[in-house]
Image 1 (cartoon, rainbow, N blue to C red):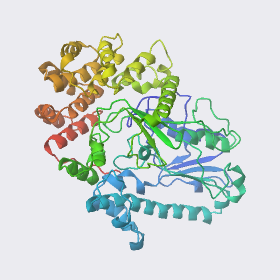
Image 2 (image 1 turned 45 degrees about the vertical axis):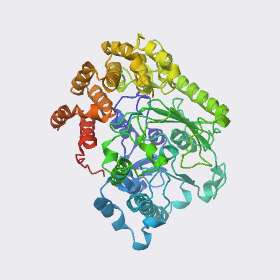
Image 3 (image 1 turned 120 degrees about the vertical axis):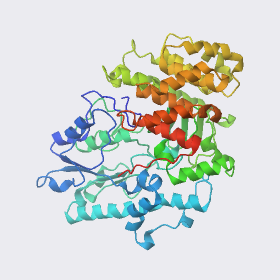
Length: 547
């Protein structure tokens, strides 16, 4: 739908609705307590259609006597703001002060992932996750007690799940198991035990995804599932069995751009990284004012991390294949091992087939996505073969990270008539790990490109690798562009140049940052400026309290 980029506001078609709207029309009382954050310009419509009430006092208690209800409750105590980003003093007041002494988890009692340095400061920070979950458990118990008090516990099916992967470095906003996996439990009272295809008091290896949640709820309520829903019902009369693979995605988070696509069969996780020149730890203000990130960056700079722990800050591979059963922390990449070649080819083909089937709209730069959204929804645009040249664009993107054997193809694509193809040719060249000096003239010629995203990425190469002043001047000029997508793209390009090259922009960044204080629509641009000043000068990041 084009809404994969976090904090985007692209429209969606009017016929796509929040699924509780169908429950309301069927007579259910629907309530949300209280987070929405729907990431589309249609958020207000979705909310008004979906909920009888959406507030921090909403719940089943305002329904008519005997009326069936669908009630959502959000527990913020294990949110990333608590377990990672908020300063310790605020975390203490939000979490620790609400736990009894015996409920607080000792940092020495936790399991440290091997991609973290096992040090007292890291243990202290990582323990926040456990304590956030401990407080969440307490608040869920309070909610269940309210259901019991109202005599509803024996007639209510309860779904419990998190809204994204773990809010920690290498978790949320990364295409790892920790980035994708969530706890998901369903509780059936005795009167509804027959609705569980797996029995109760057990677990299942059947795979499920968030896109399955809406069809499942509608199936349980006896409501016909709209054709546009891509998920499957895992319960009820409209239940269908799981496909072989789940398809997963990760796009921009905050001001940090990326595009990764994954699939899993429950045991193996395959991920394709289309911008491997970016590290796992992409600079992003909301992450990087967290103390745990500061510790990790300082340890990396001090050279005291082991090879596994260093990977977070280094360029990535284009493909990853992990055995989640044998390697739950995803340390050993099987993608380059001969014994797993057949599996790699199978997973790669399945992912490519899926992306081609859905005509993934996120292979367009956001500058383009934003421009088309003024007249048509991305959902509709991607289906128009005469306008969205997906096959050509995806073919160019698929070369990125594939090494020197595809370099000549990428150079040829710099002359392609489609600007988005040329953009991906540039991304692919930026992702090459060889010296591009031999191809200097061909790449510099591409600086005349009239399509801004292509020219920005090529300018980054020309400044970083060839010290071209014309390229540097264009990046500096574009940082001041009145289109926030282009300005952010230029700043992100500067952020990942060699440090000496990035530093040459510091006077401009200071000036730009000062002028963006209250400029609406440029919040991400301002955050990117602040991140650059933090990375290059050690400037303290300003803190914004979340919830």
